[in-house]
Amino acid sequence: MSVVKEAVNTQHLYDIRGMNVWYGAHHALKDINIGFEQNKVTAIIGPSGCGKSTFIKTLNLMLQMAPNVKVTGDMFYNGRNLLKEKTDAAELRKQIGMVFQKGNPFPQSIFENVVYGPKIHGEKNKKKLLEIAEESLKAAALWDEVKDRLHQQALSLSGGQQQRLCIARALATKPDVLLMDEPTSALDPVSTRKIEELILKLKENYTIVIVTHNMQQAARVSDQTAFFYMGELVECGDTDKIFSQPDHQKTHEYITGKFG
Image (tube, rainbow, N blue to C red; front, side, top):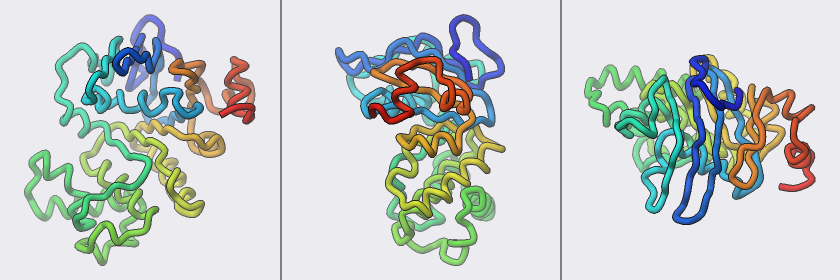
């Protein structure tokens, strides 16, 4: 990852340049310049209220649905400027999956949760839907635990299983990118470890952006780390360097626990 200042970097799946976000009169994100490489995990870190969740929700245009939100700048995804060109948000979210802080399965069966996206996008063949469900649940490391109860209520699963089910649901549309907003903050240590192991496996096929408050988690799972503070991107770079030799004093103070 590198700060993007002038030309679009064709090595990056995303290139964000000069992005600003306002909630009404509140300037929430200020002149964000950042790029994301394919098949890398990028951790977004920073104290509460620094703009991490706001930022990740711009990447699939989810934030732009909220009232009184204004987003300016350029956001190139696969060479298309999502902030300047007319974009089908539903089609975009097929390519950019998202997993939230707490597992939020629909009050339906495990199977219906996984195939929800493909069905919305027109897939009706039952055999194909079964294949998608199996493939997605295997990718989310959940298949062996639920294969004999696909038609049971998803809400009967444990918290960690529900979160992996939501990952499977996001993967079912075959996205390029997986956005994860504090995906383990509501989970126990065992479930957290499973999700982290899954992230490391998934990056073989997906580009992943994860918001986390957990410094150890960022160090364990990410290739690149970006530090946000007061709505600004202070610095970003290789995770090892950010945690051992950051360029900015504020980054050093945050990762060593002097504030947060």
